[in-house]
Image (cartoon, rainbow, N blue to C red; front, side, top):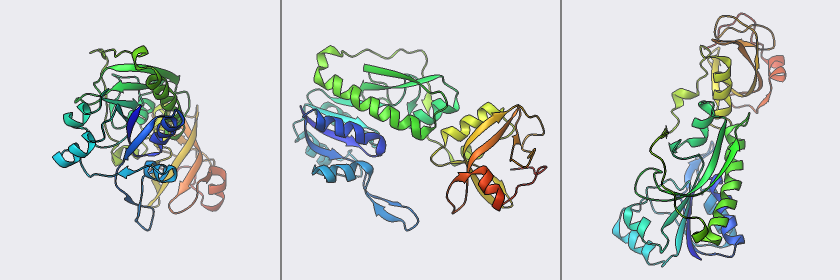
Length: 301
């Protein structure tokens, strides 16, 4: 098929690779423009642009697709379909309708649950037992289009980083199967019941709330790993907690209960196992405590 690919982060790269491996003709790759990154704030191309450059595919990075000239350029590609995976720009009706078979999206949730920007993090935070990836036929609404195919998986104790890449690989495989025989994957309208919205993560949510049960605190840690990281503050410094175990200890919420940094929660307690000080590499908590003690009795905020 004659395709355009539209994606930006690492999540989207496996789908682009799958299109190439299946022998489709990818005539253009749309991605977000380079953004400042790392300490030097150097302009850095997206993961998709880097991969497209490696393959030798033409890249387009419009700031918007609302302008008539951008829409005309897209229509002139004469596409069979556009494949979208975490692109980050709204596709106006003129773009959605331009390809022969429309625009197909790889979405990382079990729609209609978790429509929107942060479906993986929201599924973990909510304590969902399962999630999945879907190939959706796009329409003007926010993730409201009919579904062509679904793969479901257990969340278990995975972090957002782990789950995102697992869904990325599964989504790439699912999209390749759908494109191999579109007629075998007819559109199924999403049900009205069970709609939830995965709002973009607010920085205020990343501060650990030890008044919550330990299970909720541990989910918060996994949901924000690898980024932006769940954190607490001690002596004016932020500590990012990247992994933790739940213990049966009980005490005043936020209090450090022993020399191993067991922290009391609203119910039970957590014990961080992987932690990171500002400007330092992540390390096992025991290693951190040898260089920077956080004494029992401390109340963390």
